[in-house]
Image (cartoon, rainbow, N blue to C red):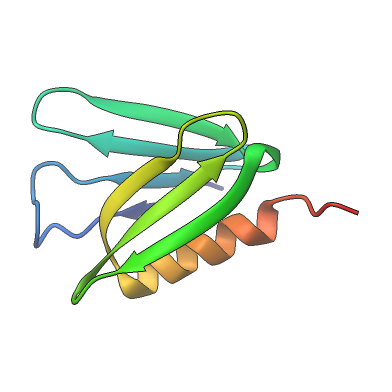
Length: 95
């Protein structure tokens, strides 16, 4: 079962970023007025997750191995924490 999180419609109601979890990895959909990007990353290819908290909204930085970081914006603090937790739970541990 896929879990989907969308960025806040309050700050940008048209171009909402989306995070979609499935059993093998996670898709980050960054929407822009013209175009956008879809990035699928296997859980095993994620080396880190960082959250930058603003006054009302958070920016999430996904750090994949051997690829540029993926930045998704305008998530609530609660959703950002939950996204980070879900990713870290599913990333295979080294050892």
